[in-house]
Amino acid sequence: MIFTPPQNIATRDFTKKSVFLAGSIEMGKAEKWQSHESRLLRDKGLNVFNPRRSDWDSTWSQDFTNPNFSQQVNWELDALDTADYIIFYFQPGTVSLIRLLELGIHIARSKCLVCCPDGFQRKGNVDIICARYNVPIFEDMLDLNRHLLNIID
Image 1 (cartoon, helix red, strand yellow):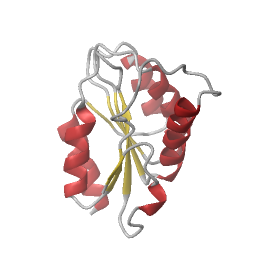
Image 2 (tube, one colour):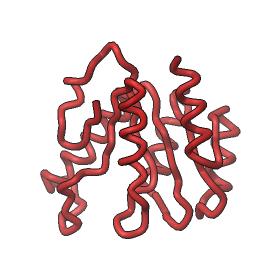
Image 3 (cartoon, one colour):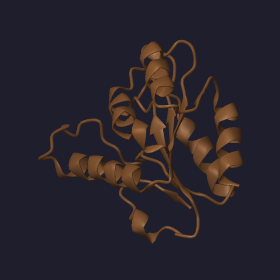
């Protein structure tokens, strides 16, 4: 099943592994890679936590006192903590500051898989932190998905 904010992730099928789709999401810059990835992983029998919210309003103030923004961030934090695996995709041409922060928070938890192609602004930083914590890093999503499906089976 695919979960997006603000759906309750506690209603997922607990007999199935879950994956959080972290990565480039910048409106107007990032491709909507989460849609394809969500369907692919769902079809493989996984719970998918996709943070791309269909009713996102870019006019919402990004302040903890804004209930919509707070709900979004807390949903993401809960899903990140709950997920069995976290896929990070750093798309070239994006900055992805929040996803870099999330990678830093979760890198040592042995549940991260990273795709960081040439052209991502902070690729060097991502490569170094992944090497330091022995986190698999891939140049494309096809290889990442093959690896993920191999370790889940």
